[in-house]
Length: 356
Length: 149
Ligand code: HEM
Ligand code: FES
Image (cartoon, rainbow over all chains, first blue to last red; front, side):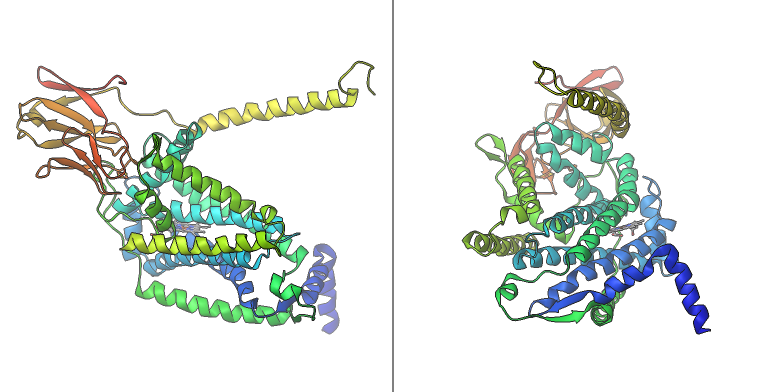
């Protein structure tokens, strides 16, 4: 028997080269220190993305991306399809969790400066993943095609228009024409269930490859101490700990999904006035509030144009953060860390304000 | 190899030629693919409405019609003449509503306000509502795009 098992393993190994991967994982170590908790945020994102893929494909079995059918098909998922309401609820909650953890993950890396040389590309692929994840949330929000999601999409897709020259084309591309119509719905569906998931998969692959190649980083404060850092084998010790975290998060997710399922308003009407209390999803609230309170005109320049250009500039700076923060241990580095806290305070304050 | 008075070597020249050709080749695919992504726009030049649908309107009231894929609003002035608007907020494109008791247009998205002539008077909207020209021809109301002012 034992002989046969080794033979089978050898047969596969000869063709797939598993042993080199297994050997790598057996040797991989994860540092243990005061800030190790943040190492778990990345795998939490993977968990929620996996849940999105599974529940998303299930929803796509019944969902119909048409003007006439969309809202009704979601209503059917909620009322007729066996356990459909739970699947939709999980998809909706897990989207929020995934986005929340992407924010936490990136902020923790910003503050710990884990993007330091040679991990610049790991950070940059992470910023792409942030954009794709937010885009998934935005495109998914339209799919139930109710009054709120239609107005939110109108506003969201109109925002690029205030950028001179290119903006109009971005708006037209997103909408599939001048206005939000049935063409926008099919386009968003295609972004949401195929283009964005493929992009996310591809960038996760790059991201994870780089993490394996470069190993786990140490926070500056830990690295500067001369003593040796304690380490934990990735396999199986760290994996077991991750599983505990996953189970915990999954439990929280299921509890919320069962007790607080998402609502479904009446079907969107392209001609109806915007409903009161329009609000984007929570992760866009701070941008929504910024747009709302910014003066409409500053020195003859459209206020929205300024906000959008500022946001664009912020995203570009954010993307190049590892290159900008080239002296992490010095004063400049401290100022850059300080900006992470400024951002957190700004985002939280704006979000709270918009809820008042 | 480089000739005496030449700016680049023969290799650079050939690479440039090949690269340029490859770029043009790719662009020739990109262009139709991009074109595909932008369907023709559908804003109408004019819309014809039966006058009978709007004859009974109270002065100062507003009734909706379809301006292509956007909502339009026809308002009867106190003197009985008609005025037409594209009922879409000039801020970020939400559909507006007319509040007859306040004599104002209101946009719920970010609290935008317009007076009864569609002039922006409060909140973020940067411009007045777009107006359309209304002409009555027999039993028909012809709503046309205003030539750009
Ligand atoms: C392979 C991946 C995915 C597929 C196939 C998929 C599929 C779908 C489908 C068919 C719907 C419409 C049904 C409904 O509205 O309940 C939907 C809605 C939605 N999706 Fe996804 N999705 C995927 C990934 C994601 C990701 C990564 C996110 C964001 C992090 C996301 C966020 C949303 C949101 C916010 C909604 C609206 C939820 C609601 O109100 O019902 N999805 N998705
Ligand atoms: S879209 Fe009307 S006020 Fe913003």
